[in-house]
Amino acid sequence: MSINTNVALVTGASSGLGTEIARLLAAHGHDLVLTGRDSAALAKLAAEIKAAHSVTITTMVKNLARPGAVAELAAISPPPF
Ligand SMILES: NC(=O)c1ccc[n+]([C@@H]2O[C@H](COP(=O)([O-])OP(=O)(O)OC[C@H]3O[C@@H](n4cnc5c(N)ncnc54)[C@H](OP(=O)(O)O)[C@@H]3O)[C@@H](O)[C@H]2O)c1
Image (spheres, rainbow, N blue to C red):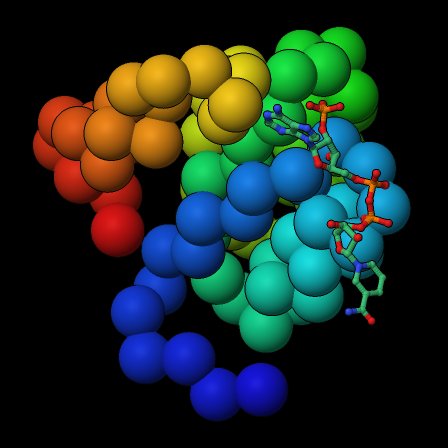
C-alpha cells in the first residue's frame, strides 16, 4: 500500500472491513478520521489504535445516508485531508 497524504478518512470504521482498514492504515503511520454511526464502537477502535500506534485520530459520528452528511464531512475545518 502506498499513499501520499498522511491523513486517511475511513467511512464505516465502526465494524467489518472499515475497522480492519483503519488498523492497517495506522500501522502504516497514517493519521485517521474515523466515521460511522456507532460512537461507542468508534471510540473503542480509536483507543485501541492509539495504544498501538503514534497516530492522531479524529472520530466523527455521521449517518452518511442523511442528505448533506457527506458535504459536512468534506467541510471539516481545518480540513485534515
Ligand atoms: N466487493 C467485495 O468483494 C466485498 C466484500 C465484502 C464486503 N463488501 C462490501 O463492503 C462494505 C463493508 O462491508 P462490511 O462487511 O465491512 O460491512 P459492515 O460490517 O456491515 O460495516 C458496515 C459499516 O458501514 C457503516 N455504515 C452503515 N450504514 C451507515 C450509514 N448510514 N452512515 C454511516 N456509516 C454507515 C457501519 O457503521 P455504523 O453501524 O456505526 O453506522 C459499519 O462501520 C459493504 O458495502 C459490503 O457489501 C464488498
